[in-house]
Length: 329
Image (cartoon, rainbow, N blue to C red):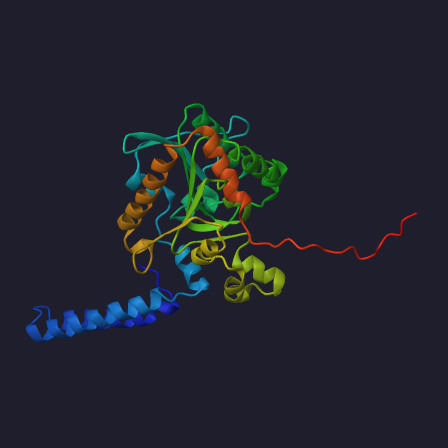
């Protein structure tokens, strides 16, 4: 059964009217077809009005849609010959991060991706896409391998955040993420990071230090979830919608702030309505940027990444006078 949100109710009403007409007249006479065509035009207009004016909270709802494509879906549609690699060679294998080698139009790449599950059993196995320290260490091990063999790195970000449990803290969650931030910044192969759903906190950053950060139109990228922010600031997680509005975490906000480099469009209504079209849009952008970096040297690629993060943010320098003048002896 397809999930519908409150803001999609006008569309649902029109869908029911269209279906009722089809049920009442299975032969679809000329009169019925005219009515259906009129309703379909009205439906298209309503869809365009709703989906081109989504609030931040509504975009977050779409980013979390249970039928939204996950990393494994995009890997199948975009790449060929994907070979999953396992383990961090220290503790174990974390299924919340799906990593391996693949080919993009006969060109070898390394893929690092958060992966959620569709069912309860899959989500338990994948830990709802929230990685443990061994997941980030596995990711870094394979990124070092990509560096050794000069393979571009593609990361797919889709996590509410790194796993905050006691076991993860005991095994060095903060250290594992910090190490990735440091070591990814020094890699000399190009890194492209695509936020396909949720981009939560250090969980996203742990595989997100990239030359280019791209976001699907209905995804978000934030230091904390809206629920977490509302719980801290307003002492009420139910005010998540208000928090989402204030946090500026949508793709358009982050593009304006120059935190990300490109918004990848989705089909009207969200990626779950046409996964193949969304995958095509992602592939076009990956090919575009990899072509640019294929013409650059290793030092240029490293410097390009450094400059991206160095130039984030807007600030002003002011000549501040000291509060107290010191007397000369």
